[in-house]
Amino acid sequence: MFRIINQYLACVNIKTDAGLRSNMEIFLHDREDISKFCINENFNKYIVDIKMEKFSVDLADRFFRDFTTEIAYAYSSMYVRYNEGVRVRYRFVTSKEDKSAVYMDIVIS
Image 1 (cartoon, rainbow, N blue to C red):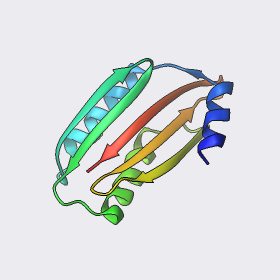
Image 2 (cartoon, one colour):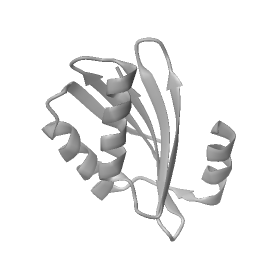
Image 3 (cartoon, one colour):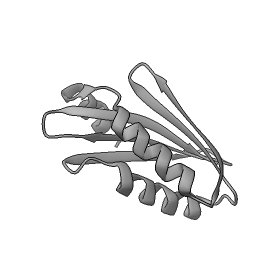
């Protein structure tokens, strides 16, 4: 799956989006199951670090699905998940029809 995402990234124009970042901040701020979060931009990529009140892989997966449903563009999105012991890392990309895309690492612990 990681190779597919890399091939997909080669076909789209990665950039950050202020509107999408605002949606992320609003969604994360309103959640009660999060103790803190941080959104960084690095080389046109977002790095979203989320600390949950109670962590499990199942809770992280449900949270990730809610998060991406809220922020993903309607045209296309895909992700790959890595279990890293006490945290889960998602590599997520979503794009519009004009091939502009947002790429992010989402780390949930």
